[in-house]
Image (cartoon, rainbow, N blue to C red; front, side, top):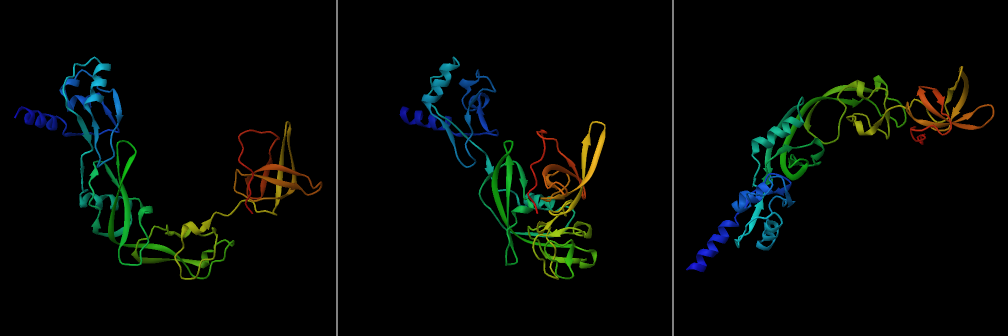
Length: 302
């Protein structure tokens, strides 16, 4: 009978206690075992377990801690810690999804969701977590942010329909050629939301350069576009050479292309010698003094 009571006491003392931080502190041990009330509250005694797992301090480990901090601990008990978890509330999932799609007319229906218990924290469903699907539903991967920046993965299968204005190509858009206003139009789209970012304003695409061909009647994806370079390889550029009492201007040929701020190689049209210059504006570069620090890497674009 005495042995049985002792066993019950040990099991009761070792029930898992909830933890809310990334590490286990003195205050956590004190909440599990009052004998450790004298421990410094912020003293750290190891990392907390992952959600769904347990971290158990066995009797021997507890006695070593007690000895180091001059705590009178004679119990045979263990101390167990775990994250309190629960299946995320469906309404909270919907709220996080609507937050991601704020400003867009979207209809969201959760068909299925992960049933694994998750820690308490901020629920996030980034647009990048939406998986492409050929069916009428899509898998949306999200996470719970807890203990600072730690993330616990969750998911939901959703029916997701959006209604918005998108940019559509009127004719084939050729790679490397700037998009003209006459080649695109705005059109109302209603259908599944994909994770590809589609242009929603004409100003997003006019003047941009398609990396690959975009077929007529296709919605224009921003990932397929590049900003036009201020200097193209082979361009004739105005070269400015700063001097102590002014500057010299001449002409050169760009050996590489790039945007403003990029340092490229330029060839002197008369001597044929090359030098480094920083793109200052469209068709204009400024010579970079040899050994100048803190400059961008020479452009390799063409």
